[in-house]
Length: 185
Image (cartoon, rainbow, N blue to C red; front, side, top):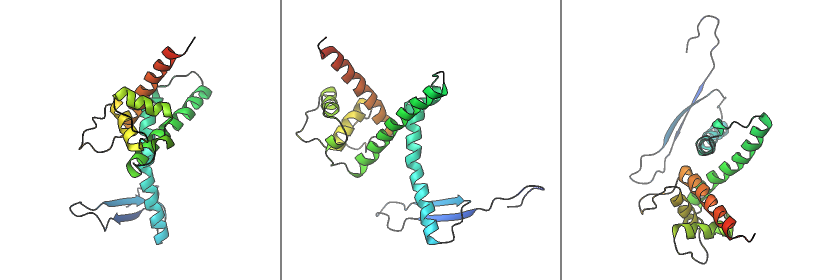
């Protein structure tokens, strides 16, 4: 790329990653990436591709922060208050992104590894579903996502971050309402 007078040019290195063992009938993935990092060895290329793969996880986290918790609209008066709120929201956003990924990769794990007993019970009560003795992660996650608008039909696939964060918010509010009305005063 030619530089204008007085301008410097950033060197870029193209990296092409292709999937070789795609399932039959599925178009293989192909990424065409540019980087300003040196990628002269296979190890550097693999590291760069791993960075790119990770960026989707980060995108999901920031999507939950921006759209789920609307952190850009926070007006808390001081930077310290904003930092404290963001610290809390990042943890909750990470949990939602983690639940979404784990629900897809390890759906048969015990739900109690990820949810409090009351969260599990609440998901079944609020959706009027019959609770099994040992609920699995994907079952509870689908119920929570259903509270967030996920239709939960047979061909709908897995719930996304938005349905999970909305379902988590609705479930938490209803559980708080239930707890406050049943607690002795």
